[in-house]
Image: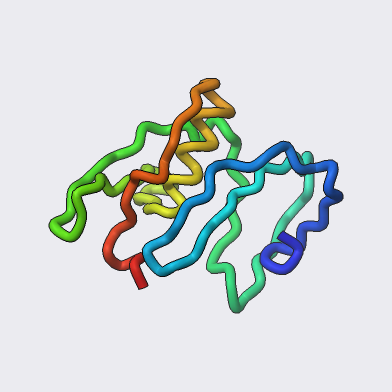
Length: 120
């Protein structure tokens, strides 16, 4: 977080981790859930971050949309947010977080596919 958005937190801010998500491009994402409290305005590292959004958790708790693509048998997950759709892997991580944090449901998301443009 320090490198991407300039947020420095101690280890005791970590609440836990979500499931690893293996991307089509060969990376393994390990989402770490932290409690930051009030942090003020965050600025993304220009070379790595297109935008920084501070969104209330309840606004993230939206019903996903699942579409099919000819390249995969798995459903592609999309979340409606900011007037557009957020795609996997981000959508998968956000969906799992909200299922746990907002609804108390254990939900696995590794089976959800990414759109083809994210395979690179």
